[in-house]
Image 1 (spheres, helix red, strand yellow):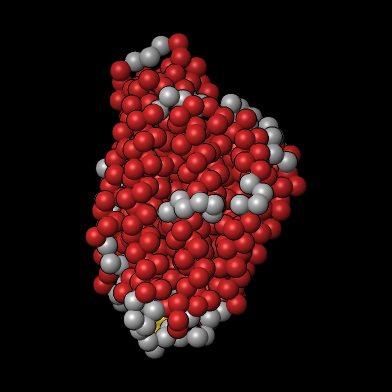
Image 2 (spheres, one colour):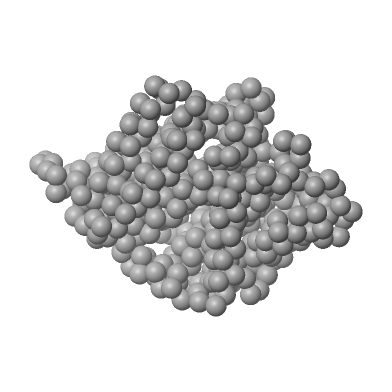
Length: 479
């Protein structure tokens, strides 16, 4: 058993700092009540920023911590960087929204903070027990966030649906872990990988399938996507932004580490499963989105389809495929942040609107919202030369290099189908008769998020190399 010293905890210092910060902010919230919501929100943003600095100073490749249950590599570093950036963005977008929709509760940023700790623990987990603890810390926080607008029936409904289905996935995960432990005698990733490489048993394969199904629920991969449209629509818009920006990145990072470390010897088994998940996710995301009139439901199906594209890179594997996945997830998070920054600005007479028809004539009423949204929609649909085109190009290129011609062709075709509902939004903004103007009071922090997202989406055209190189270097730390 490892003796825990201060130096041995260096890899986990960011998570420890966030946990201590969350406790201190919780005390402030209890003492000052909901009047401290804004203070705690910005305090949470600062805590994530400091944790990011601590992680950078602590180094990338370090010795495992907590008896080899927690690791820090270039891969986990990059993915945790994305998670913290997404959480900073989502909390920043939510501050004004909480006051506009009368959800002034100090618990909101604290739950986002605790979910972030869970995601970071989950990404760096090197043991099934630490994996489960991180996953549940994230999930329990998100269940409450989905239903935090308790006076709103749709929010309560979305929270209940998310909780029930999440409990089912949690049970599947635990059952799978128990089978893996029973047939390998260990919960450590490396030991499981060594055991399965030497002796593959049917029970371990069944346990692996249960684990994979539970994690497919977390990334909204078809057929485990059923919760996504209802939860996205019913949850408060700022919570929907959080769901769209962050949890899928953490879950995707965990899936990658599981498939290529403990379950690398099961490649022939998981290859078929992931191929099917990618195909179904792309198809459902493309065709089901055609019938949506609510923007949040539309983004839900868009996220399902985009997870399918990311899964193509995972199926392709290797440095090219996985680095393409990381570039794709990064740019998707940036584009989604910009889109939600604009959605949160869509208010009339103090009330939020989320129907596509509410965007009618936006180019004439509020052009500074219409033109950035058009750029984001062109980008996410894969129209060249914007960043979204390059991310899909890298995914399809990796698929072709790996011989996945069928999956690449399906990806291109579903991308063309999905572009219809993105272009429909642009058509509504620029060619339909103008509706009433949106409220003009918009917080500067939202303008900053929209501006930064726009800068990355357009700027990536001129210099895509840094992100591609950083992603490739991070993937090398996985193997």
